[in-house]
Amino acid sequence: MGLPLGLVLADAGMNVCLLDVNGRMLDEVRHGRMPFEDRGAQEVLDRVLAAGRLSFSTETSAIAGVPIVIVTIATPVDEYQNPDFKVFTAWADAAAPHLSPDQLIVLRSTIYPGTTEWVDKHFREAGRPVQVAYCPERIVQGFAVEELHTLPQIVSGTSEVARRRAAELFERIGTTVVPLAPMEAEFAKLFANAYRYILFAIANQFYMVADSAGVDYNRVLTGLKTDYPRAKGVPGAGFTAGPCLYKDTMQLAAFSQNHFPLGHAAVVINEGLILYLVERIKQQYDMEKTTIGLLGMAFKSDCDDIRSSLSYKLKKLLKLSAKRVIAADPHVVVDPELLPVDEVIEQSDLLILCTPHAEFKNLDLRGKPLLDVWGIYPQSV
Image (cartoon, rainbow, N blue to C red; front, side):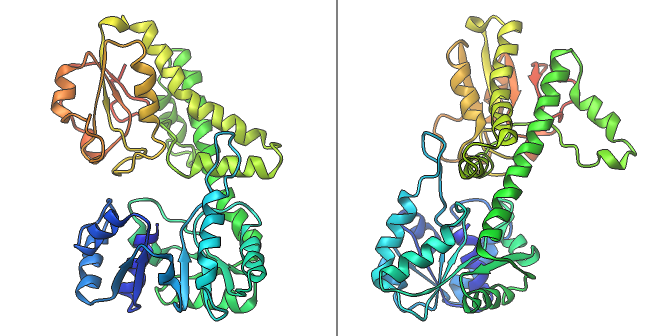
């Protein structure tokens, strides 16, 4: 999320230094190559490089004297599904010696409730009383450059000065500002992602109930939504994954001392869909004689990001019993085991549509059976 925002700010006429510990990624950007897919980003990168508005660094000291420092370090969850603050606190400790009172620190990623105030207190106790704001990103991955200009931006700060300065920053790129208090903004981000995760869990639960009864959930969904406005928001089933929704649901669970049964139930359902599919396949196929082909390994459609992708969980489980498991994804370039789509179709006895990329919607499956939770192919098994 940091790179698209940096590009948009530079395109608005600001000088931007991109700071990251990943020097290889910075070299790609420096040489004019986007390291991931984002619609319209390459054109913006070309413009701002030509205009000389981007600089690059791997050193924390690069933040010294910079009026606005935007931090895109998130709070992950550990192996116990509790917030893990190690990376965030390590950054704060490393950054403190280079900060001065006139600087604005803008926290951008999902953070545990109370983190904005903690950062403000942490720097003050270190003798670095900076201005601290929390302005959560809310873009859809792959469309960040477009949505940064169009989505309203929630803005909060630990002081009125911090909030005002952060608002002015985002107003420069044409966004509407929505003011909130820091913890309100932190909850707004977490609630939005947990709501989506729970909503997708409802659809996946419906799918498993219908499928276990031998009924096509997607035909039911089409029927109940046809010309019926109150069912407009009912989603289709699918693999609910990625680096945010699950993690943010667990952040809320931890904050509420695990009194978040809806969130925990959503995790069981969304992660359990993969287990359900594996058991269903085992009941229908002689696994020791079956080669299974997975179509799509990114965590969402038309995206190249494989972080927390349930396709890989499915692959791992199937490999325990299937003769062979092979996979293809025209977007993913970081997995050397992937094969071309045509080869996967040709070599497989059963195909599974894991990620509904646009390229997969009109494939010649050569008569091979396809398991399609998403409902893209109406005649799936």
